[in-house]
Image 1 (cartoon, rainbow, N blue to C red):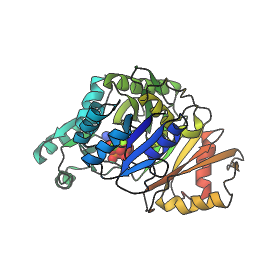
Image 2: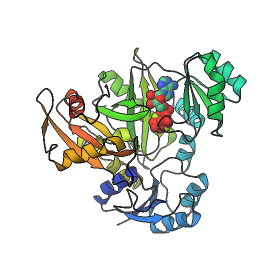
Image 3: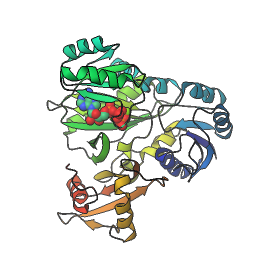
Image 4: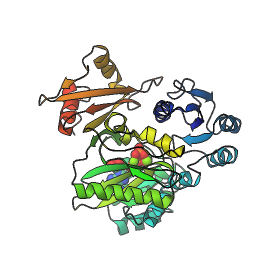
Length: 384
Ligand code: ATP
Ligand code: MG
Ligand code: MG
């Protein structure tokens, strides 16, 4: 069988390797941390992501190369493209690594984004803030995640401090109009080199402290919005000529408008629900896409709520598993059965806010999954 090389050995690479193994592929990952989550289930080259010799070794060992994070160094991407087969190409990475390029690409696909301006200096920020209106969100153009590298400016008095703080990151800045969204949604699209596109059902995402807490599927939105959200995601994947997965984060406003927030050219935390809830998981779909296999059926088989297991939740989740408290089926508050499927990533070193795993709560109605989360006390005080 062929070997798939994965740049990055985190949980996304691990779940990719687990799913891809079932299709007969072997996996090799490149990651600086020994015994990385992916390295525990695949071969691992232990080296930094920017190590050219290691990248060359990955290229030599793999027939196909993919990545599990988007901040791949451009030189390394070029080297891998030259020495192996990188079906996703480096163009998609280049676009999604930078918020301004990404927004331009989304607009070019005819899809709305929040009104924004590039910021060159503090005076420029003042001007943009008065044109776009406050509140507005100042973001670093590159490198941000989990809300790091951004500042919600609520009054003119905050402008100087916001600018001085974010400019330290040393990247370009962008100011976005604050969208008073009713819900945050995401759609994961898959596109194969032969141009086939499939989308997974819309996830409704709940963030706490800018970190994904839960994804609810089906999203509690009308069928028209669902169809529109999937259409926008397909249109972006098509327009970008994406290969593999493209996760599309969106805002839904009270008057039914959708704005795309950002993209990720890889499996996404908000797609973890697909592991048990769908006929094909996002990880299998990604492997199918990059290996140019026909795409799988993305249909939802059951309502599901995915809840993340952060460092502060890990012990209690492990205990619920080991004591059998989360046996096959657990009654929810309403007395309906919920099936908790636990996924732990095997990361060394648990820390607060660090993603250590997730639980897919298979249920007959998403409200039962949400009630289950409140009932367990593990995620207590977190209002949904
Ligand atoms: P991720 O971990 O998803 O990559 P990130 O650091 O790249 O996050 P964004 O997704 O751009 O950051 O923003 C984080 C969160 O901040 C969003 O999920 C949303 O809740 C809020 N947010 C960002 N931009 C806006 C906006 N223009 N209007 C309203 N809320 C926003
Ligand atoms: Mg992001
Ligand atoms: Mg985001």
